[in-house]
Image (cartoon, rainbow, N blue to C red; front, side, top):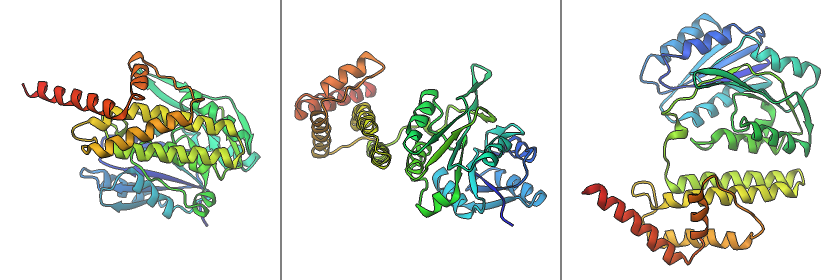
Length: 335
C-alpha cells in the first residue's frame, strides 16, 4: 500500500547535520509517509548515514546519483515518489513533531491542491516564526493568497508547502534551475492548482548558510534565462486565472530584475564578451521599456534608480561607458 505523503530530501555533503533532520522525521506524530533520500554525489559520509537510516526504517529509501545539483536530485525524488502528496526538506534543516500532522489535519477536512505553512528562521541567534493566518483560496483567488506569501517572504520555497503528485506528474512539472528553482516550480505548479490553503502553523526550521547557492554568482546568460522563465510562468498565471493585473506584475518584475542584471553583463568572467551581443541585449531592454511606459520600476537604492535611467541612453554609448569602466577596474586591480 502506497504512503499518503512522500518527503523528498536532496543530500550533498551533509554528514555534520543530516542526522538531526532525519531524527526529527522519525519523531513525527503522523506516520504514513516515505522519505526519498537522493544522495547527490556526496564526498563525505552522508551516503552511509542515509543507508543507515534506510536499514533501520523501511520508509526511508536511498538513491545515489553523480553530483548534478539539487534540481536533478529533487526531480529524481519526484519520479520515485509514490505518495498522494509530496513535500520537501533540505538535509541541513529539521522539523517539529507535528510538521506532517499540521498538513494532514487540514486535508482530512478538505482535499486541496496546495498546502502552505509558515516557517521558523534563525535571525541574530534567535528562532522566530514567520506566519500567515489560516485562509482558503480558490481559482483566481489563489493569486491573492500567493501575494500574502510574497509579502511575508515565504513564497519562493518548496519545503514549507505540500503538493499533489498527480498534478505534478500529469503536467510534467519539475525543477530546471540551480538558483531560485523553488520559486519557478511554485509558479508553474500554481497554473494547475484550483485550491490553496494557508495553515496557521510553522513547524519547519530553516537554516541559512553564507555559502549557499543563493549567495553564489552565476553567468549573465543563465540569470536572464531564469528571469525569462519566471516571467513566462507569471504571464501564464495571469491568462489561466484571467487576472490582467498579474500580467502587469509579471512585466514589472521582469524589467526590474533585467535592470539589476545588466551590469553583470560586463563581468569579466561571467558576462558577455561579444560587443554585438551586448548591444542586442541593450536594444531588447530599451525596447521593452518603451513598450511598457506604464510600468513604474522601483529600486531600493539611489544607485539602482540612477542606473535604470542611464541604461535607457543610446546603446552604443551605454555599452562604451560600462565596458570602459570594467576595463579601468581590471587595470587598477592589476596595479
